[in-house]
Every structure is written in C-alpha cells, then in structure tokens.
Image (tube, rainbow, N blue to C red; front, side, top):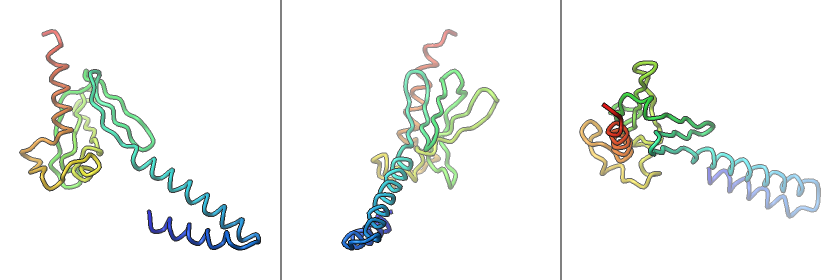
Length: 146
C-alpha cells in the first residue's frame, strides 16, 4: 500500500504547484487517497483475539463476536494449511459448530510479535493464543459446581 500511496501523493504534490483547477484537483486527490489508506489501515489492523474471565472476544474487521465460556465445548488448534496454528472454538450449541479465530493463525504471528519460524509443529506445539484460551476455559471449568 505504501508505494501506490507515495506515487499518488507525489502526483498530487506536482499538481499542487500549478495555479489552476488541476492544483485544486491534486490537493483533493491527495486528501482522498490519504483518507482511504488510513481507513484501510485501521480496518486491516483491527483484528484481535481477547481472552478474559467471561469468555473469548473476536474483533473482526467490521464486527465483534463475543463467546461466553458456557457456550464453548472445547478449544482446539488447527494444523491444516490455511489456518495453521489458529485457535478453533467448538461450540456446545449447535453441537460441533467450529469458529476459527483467524488473528491467531501462524500467518499473523509476526503481527503478534512472535517469530513464525520458532513456533514449531502445530500438531504438537500449542501456540500462545491457544494456550491462553485453553487455560482460560480450564479456569472457568474449575469454578463450575460438579
């Protein structure tokens, strides 16, 4: 996104030097492109995976999904190709419904500050997001009456 932004801004700056309608159009072009890029940046980086005492929150680009611990049957970690290392939330109702937490996949590891090379095999090594979700679910289960 950076290179096209610089090209358009450069063209806009050149147009700004003209004392005509083209200069005004260049200024508007620069403003619109900067606003669109800022919006895309905010939308693209908004994704989050939050584990707390009440459950798991998945903040997506345009929505937020809140899943309470009592709705969750089990937490798994994907070892497939597209969602390698991603947390999978299996719901109680409807039975077996699976929700993939995409921000926790290995493809997003660098955004989380993790070294993707040092993560290990997803079939045998739990990633930090999966460990946090499993630990949170276990804590909730331990507080439930038997």
